[in-house]
Image: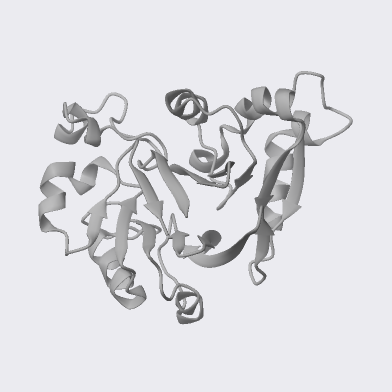
Length: 256
């Protein structure tokens, strides 16, 4: 069994958007308040994070997380990586924190954070990281679990999703090939992005997400990476097909 905790389910600006008077941004419903997207996946006393965005510190405090076994990165956009400096308390206690991502992502992190990755610029207070490069075509193992990378396209940018047992997490999807869809058979839970109702150049709309969900045919699907333009959580939930749900910050799932 694995446990999945949704730490954030919002798009790059989160909800509410600073300064916005959009009705969803003014909502008093806690399910309409969304930090940047990330999940914690737990099994056998292991805690692995998928993406480490700007809200990482707040998210860890909220769930009282006292250990971190590693971080799986989907891609290098700011809302998915900008919390990496805040892993310092974990590396101080545990030693090097393993990270996993594509070669391109690793090179981007080295460019953005030379004081973490460049031995000539590193200083005593910075995080200690163990770098692991992921080949999009090869599965690997973490603490006894097989991790299968799933390549999706974020407009023209290759992004990695991850399958762990019968759970898969896909974010920032615009398209996915039929070969990658084959890797997603027999899922208990799929997590996939649905930005808004209208079409977008690099993210799935709700209808586009529902079309992909139909082709994958998981038992249950939870939508994430949501913008205020999708609408109120309560209202959108009413129009979703059976076994498709809006995720929300703090949602926990146990998956066999």
